[in-house]
Length: 99
Ligand SMILES: [Zn+2]
Image 1 (cartoon, rainbow, N blue to C red):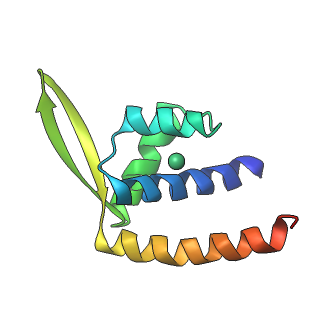
Image 2 (cartoon, rainbow, N blue to C red):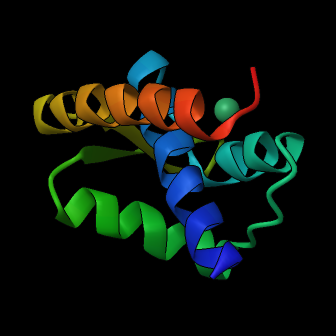
């Protein structure tokens, strides 16, 4: 149950960061680890793919120094979703956190 909630939070982090700049898997894993989420590639990549297939992220592959890396940015649909989520996060924090 806790894991499900944390995975939902991780999705919010991903959308938030993809709204600020283009993100990629390894970088996002480090960012989530910084926040205390231990999410490995076997969990993160399916999350990114799901967000993309839901139309919330779009990706582009770039080759750098012979290595290809997939970058994700938020879509218009993702931006609208993030806006709705932000309102709910604010409301939830207000409700469940002590003053
Ligand atoms: Zn973050």
